[in-house]
Length: 353
Image (cartoon, rainbow, N blue to C red; front, side):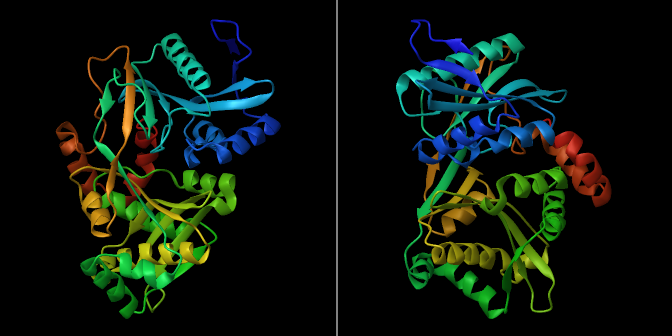
């Protein structure tokens, strides 16, 4: 716990991993705070600690017994990429979520104190909105969000013509969608997909943990062919009146059958039926295939502002597949047997965050 320099009544505390009562208050605050996202939920602390074995610093600002702001942080001490304090590892959104400026500033100040004490190379806050014009800012990523209309047919007609034709192709191919109780089919498709792209797969136990921790707010939808073969699958998060498809995978035949297009339409259609208001297509790197795919759906990109305090670096780290220095590694990973890649992948990916 720490006090503000002027000895005000606002205090900064660290959420204890076994403090169920405070975690419930934390989540109640996140649910009502306009700046908060699904990735500010308290459950991420146990996932980051238990699955990836990273230390966490889930900070909250409190005054008169009421939470004023939260800042979830994870310390990724990587032998591959160095040491970083991040809000939040394995999340696309992060940074401070607060209802007033003093709470936000106090949380960021405490994060900087922790970063310096840990001796990290940098502090990274994955802000949706720009907070500091003088902080180094990563401009690589954008997010795509769009309103879900009240009627199913209106959502179909809102999809641009060429993309709508792909959705109708999937329907014509008699594809169907199913909600899975386990991550088994998803992981089979996901691991095959990322292997084809030359990147390591997150461990299966991570996806199991997501379903355990977040319950009905974490859902697996799988598209199957008429003969029952799984073709494409997605794990989505539900937060307030939004749906966020977050992890996806497919087999190669999925593209010819328009299974991926059908998958996202089914997710949108089901969200419409549930009365949800926002379809959050999530983060993409500018100039990539996923970026173009989401644009084809009629979604417009909105910049994300990942901001940094650099302590032992001269520039923002570029630990992503677009970095030319990783191309040899990506090529080698594609040639690796899938079973070996799935065994080795978790040891590598935990260092990425």
